[in-house]
Image (cartoon, rainbow, N blue to C red):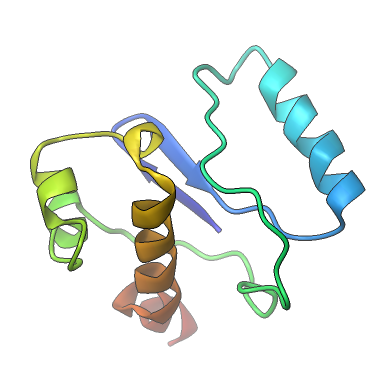
Amino acid sequence: MLLYIDETFFQVLEGNEESLHNLYKKIELDERHTKVVKLIEEPIDKRTFSDWSMGYAKATRAEFSTIPGLNDFFLRGLSFNALGKGRAKVLLEAFREGKWRRSLSQ
């Protein structure tokens, strides 16, 4: 899963620990990426986005600000790299269950 707003990306990487570690290092070393911040690193029982395919759904800062627990964050104009672990999880759950996914599957 990859989100983009105001020149900032929020990406979820899932898979084999060693592969993810190698991929993350490549991202960190890539000169096109700046201010890379790892918000969450933890083992999971099953992949959250395993049945997703590439797609595109448009979401505005105003739409993000309607997510309970994140409304003040996006109204203040903060970027993804300022999310803490708790708010990052709230965003992941809202996106996984939210209208953006439904609009992609139609």
